[in-house]
Image (cartoon, rainbow, N blue to C red; front, side, top):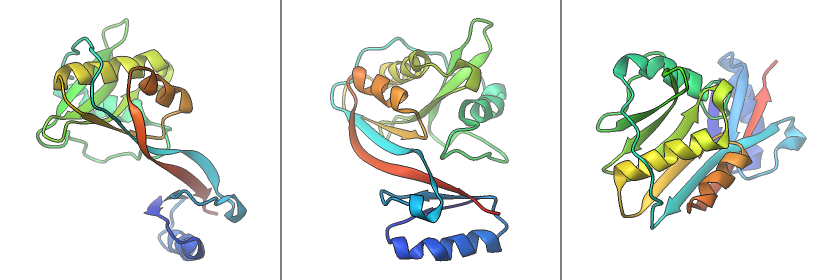
Length: 184
């Protein structure tokens, strides 16, 4: 897979050639340009959200390190903007919150960067992807960070998930569409 940010539509052809040269199966582009004429399919892309007054939430437990890799993979598999990571470890100085399902097994996670006051894309396993699970992860992150402004990054989340984040008080401050082309 090849991924790039596209500002000038004239570069699309060069990026397709580059994707073929590196034997990429997919070309992902971040752009607010309409790329359907080039054969691309539109996906929910990147959304940056923010709140100045975080909603109250109940704390979540920290995800046990031995569950990190499998929960990370399961939480983002199949979503645009997320790719398989070979040796996943949480970014330094972050907190990884876990959401458990009825069986007690993790069904989602949320990475919180306290220094940046950033919530990095809550993720939920495919079989548990309901807005309430995403909202629960976000509210757990808000409880972790406490009062003050909070930024939220979302990659590939459905419009319904974005609506759920807006319903608890986050506002969209930036949005970039995601585009995908299968390379043959």
